[in-house]
Amino acid sequence: MSRELKCLKKETKDFQGVRILVSDLILPEGLQKPLPHYREILSKCEIEVADLIMKGLRNQQIADNTCKTVKAVKYHITNIYKKCEVHSRVEFIFKYLEKNN
Image (tube, rainbow, N blue to C red; front, side, top):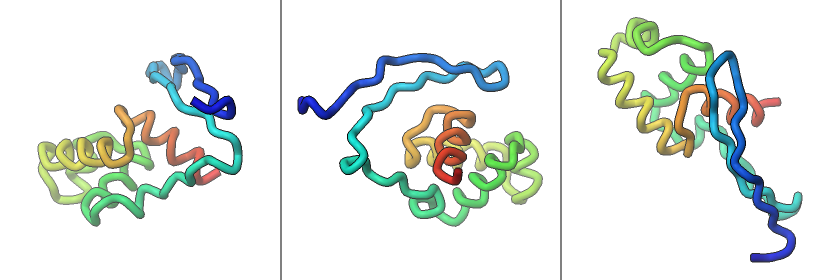
């Protein structure tokens, strides 16, 4: 690996009592890939669910707001996590709140 690349060791951070795992590759300023906004990589239904996740709604509340079943909401959330390369709701929110600030 290049000398310019530094690996950040895995660490945990607490957010409202939820522990998340953070591990990233830190690149020099000029080599960092811009993070696409989640609206650029998700389907229309997934964006609708993602927007409600960002507002802090639970699965049942999302289902009620979108006229979908809870099972359908969970399916969309799984796809959102895969496409956005996250493993939890908190990690998703952190990733995209950072982008918008």
